[in-house]
Length: 196
Image 1 (cartoon, helix red, strand yellow):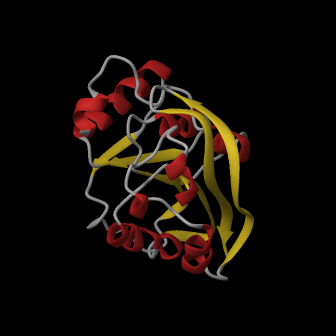
Image 2 (spheres, rainbow, N blue to C red):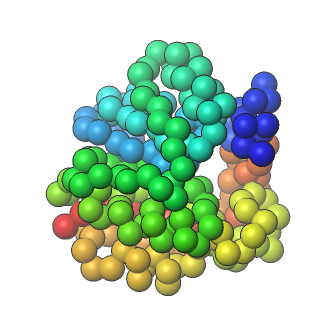
Image 3 (spheres, rainbow, N blue to C red):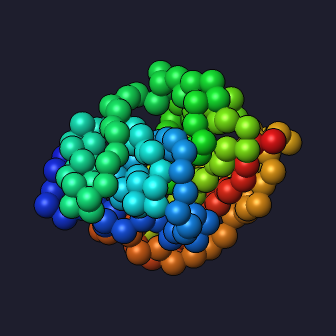
């Protein structure tokens, strides 16, 4: 499905970065950032343009090819890594930042990924997430059609625990206009914080 979606001429979710990402990270920066389930690279390319050393992961080889295409178009460098996140090991204190924009996975994969976020970051490293909440199931404006692949605020609060300095952790409703597949009023959960 993903290779087919990403092979179309138009970028499935557009070429512009996610609004929440732009809001939280707008200044030039440095350090190694991991983008999980990055698709066609719009967020990775944006971060690379700010000066970060970015690695974009995705299951889709076509998505990662489009990431390289977009990086070339924007004149930046992005490393790509084709991985199954159900098996991928983020590493120990390997990253200055981890970004997960609309990374939706089956519950077992989600647990595997979320349980590694804290350990994968260096001290004071940042975590940024925007994902669809379970309330999104009724909106029909984007996201998985399986409710088990959507998030609840309680789940994220429990998984993240008290080992973060969280500036943002909330569920909100907002208008999203990101390419063909994310369009309209949506229910999302946003997270931004740093490892204690």
